[in-house]
Image (cartoon, rainbow, N blue to C red; front, side):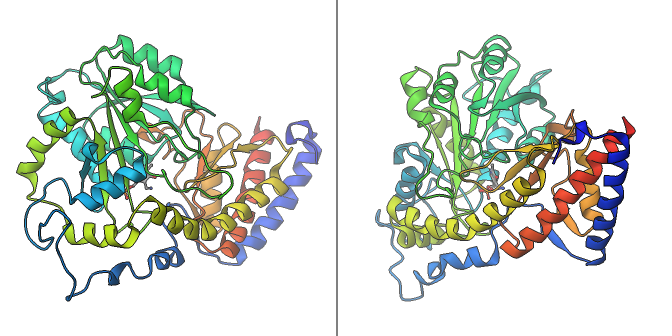
Length: 427
Ligand code: PMP
């Protein structure tokens, strides 16, 4: 098949007729398929079988530190779960604060503390005329929602295959004191599945920020979420690299077991320097007497250690891989060589990121919806929901079955073709 841009007007018109007929046929099926959010499927929730049973009324409820997990106390988490999360994040327990069921709360709290009280004695961000955050794009919509919520100005930073454009990051962070943070998903990024190279991580660690309270928000949400056993990416430990570079306080790292155990009741963790921990704990001690230690104990006893987590993640990968492969196969078979879209084959994480021809993403998402396929709203992967090229679409293959993913992707590629042909005809 020729690239669409090489087709004559007549060929394009004929193609449009064929595609419209195929589209109407698909629409008539009355499907209802959702590939919008990165939710584990019901089958994946079943992978954590037994997690609810490691503790019952007869269990010894004491943590290894002697505290009764049913009672108050232990603000930063019980030692065995700190150790587990530290192993998962590639750092040590002394850097860990255990949160509630979701890491997003820890991220929100961290921005919120900086906004109302300031970081380590610095001016609270609410008292400054301008506060800016750098946002590698495409990125995670809920990150951008947090910074938008606090009125923080967001600046797009383009992503490359090795991470964010570090020339731009260095230039802005090192020269502009109003730049206070950057959102990063360093491993199997949402939505592109990109992993930061060692050079990128080192360049982050060696930033020389103009603002003393500049912090990297290192959201390692997919740290153990590999798709392939024989092709796994490992990235450098940012906390260790920042220490080596003389910037120990520059990073807050986040992770959770949301997509390991249960997104509704997992365990979350923040890893950061001792000074940042002390600063954060001054606030947390007002905010709570402690998070859910029964759930922490349950997770620590169930997974035991990093090996336990890794074994467990293989089972998730077995369910995820066929869905990713089905989706990618349809994309390749139907779109390769047409010059109307590009995508990256991820090795982990929860998403496939698709770039359509400029000006087509919104129309593709709308066409899919009309045919019963729900995608994440176009623009959601950019700050302010504004994709300047109207090109990026996030595909989330985790929730539907592989068969549903096949059907949904077939409709998706049809919509990509149809919208692209219409765009070319209108040009
Ligand atoms: N960070 C990223 C990059 C995510 O993709 C997600 C879930 N989609 C989260 C955080 C949410 O994590 P949690 O459930 O721990 O709040």
